[in-house]
Image 1 (cartoon, rainbow, N blue to C red):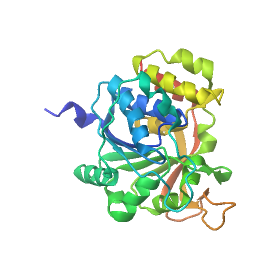
Image 2: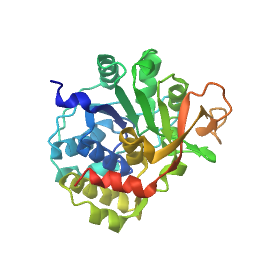
Image 3: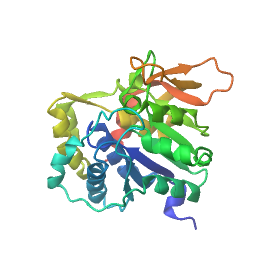
Image 4: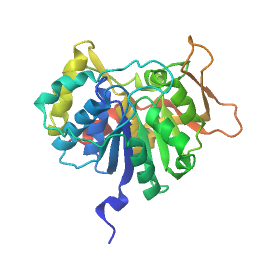
Length: 294
C-alpha cells in the first residue's frame, strides 16, 4: 500500500518570512493544505535565522516537524534592502526552535531535489538569491524539478516588483534556467487580492492563523490591509485553474540603475520558457484559501 504522502504534492518553500505578512499567511496555508507534503523551508535575505524562528513557530503550532534552513543573508551584487525581520519582535509569544543548521540551505535544496527527481515544486516567495546560487552551482537541478513557482515580477505593464528588486542579478539567473514548469505570478495579479486589516483579523480564528494574526500586527502598524501575494502562488500549485497563464520568455533588466530589476514578458518567442499569470479568480481564491483551515 502506498504511503499517505505518496499522493500528496511535494513542495519546498523558499521565503523571506518576517516582513510583509503574506509569507506567514502562505506558510500557514501550506501547513494546513492536506494535499501538501512540505519537505522543507529555506529562508533568505537579512536575518535569515530570525526568519527561520518565525517559520518554526508556525510549524510548531501545526505540530509538523519541517526541516528549516537559514539561507543567504544578502543579495549577490546589490545593497541589501531588507536587513531585518521586523516580525521577530513577536516571537516571544510563540514557542519556536532557535537552533538551525548553518550554511547548509543550498546543500539541503540540492540533496532533497535529487532525492525526488521530477516530483518537487520549488515555491519561491522572496528574493531569489538561494535559488540562483543553487541553479548556478548545480546546473542540472532545474531539470530535476517538477516545477518552479514564483511570486515574482510585474509584467502588465512591465515594472519592478519587490522580490526581483531585492536581488535582480539572482532573478536573472533563475529566469535563464530551463525548468519543466517555470511559472510566475506577478504583482499586477496579486494586488487584486487585498483584504482590510479588520476583516483579516476576524477571519484568523483557526489555531494555525492565530500566530499569523499576531505577527500581522507588526505589519498593520504601517499598513491598513494585507495583499495575498504569496498565498496565491502557493494555491496555484494545488489548483492551477485559479489563474490563466500566458506563455513567453521573461527578461530581467540589468542595464542601468533606473530600470534595474524590471521584468518583461516576451510573448513572441518561438520557444517560450515561462508561464506568467494573466488573471485570477478572486472569489474562488479566497474560498479555496480559507477552506483549508476549516
